[in-house]
Image (cartoon, rainbow, N blue to C red; front, top):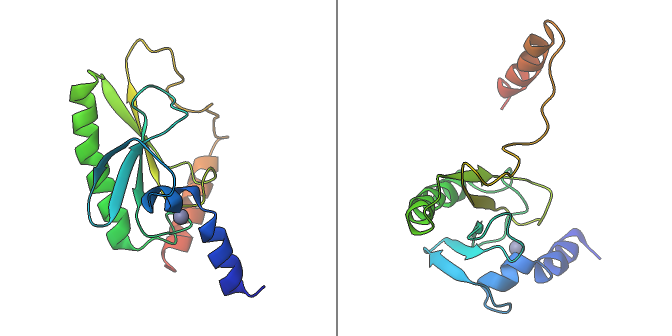
Length: 144
Ligand SMILES: [Zn+2]
């Protein structure tokens, strides 16, 4: 198989592309010309939604700036509705990056008393180590 064929076959199996195409049912809640929002069938909390571009991009890095903007501005709008409709205290936004290989963000309604983890396990830096990590990323950003 050529790279193009592998990519095509992969996309043909992409569960989010199938949802966008209507080949797999989903609880759709909002859409624009470029973005679709539907509920995750394995919710972290009830109402947990996914915002996906209708066009396939493997991840956030490969998506265009315009698509990233559309996904996040649509996410903001849905987040407002979610907070009101579900009486959530706040809505967590997450880009996991390793679950489904079709760029998406998670919108998770949260409640102060929901007893879920607030974030992932947290570590700490050795003395001066934080500057080293900041410099590594800053140096690379100068090349982009
Ligand atoms: Zn896809």
